[in-house]
Length: 176
Image (cartoon, rainbow, N blue to C red; front, side):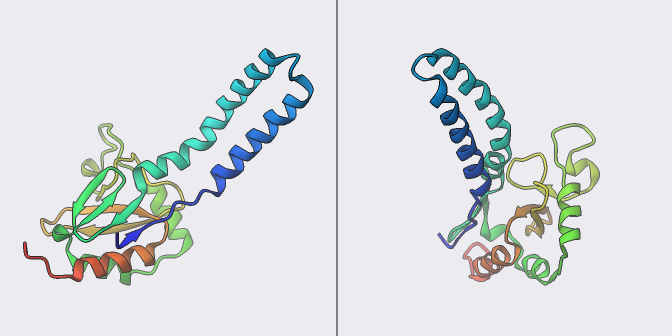
């Protein structure tokens, strides 16, 4: 594996720790006498925990990035490195973005399977990974394939990702 983008787990750890502390505190007064009540409240608070974990799980499924010797894997998609135009990677690396531009780009990157919201319907680059949009705050990188298709990739660390992708695409491939 040449590059794997690490997913932050701080938010998930905080949410799970607060859930466990909360049900543990409730259990001090209710267990063992009111086991059914404690179990019901634990399930009820679990329903509050799940939406808090939905975004980190979604980021893990749809926006995790791995680069190996022959493949760029983003979420559920695999893109052969031989199909990526190295000049577009270099151009993306040369772009400088501010935090405000990063937030604006993530808010405007939508590729939902709804007529009018598809990226191809709006003339925008296709979002890679299987998600319907880029999570707010994640940086987006636009690269091209040799066929001319533009691809948007949501990344947490733009510089490290583009450096690894540039190194991986600069290696000569026999298929070119």
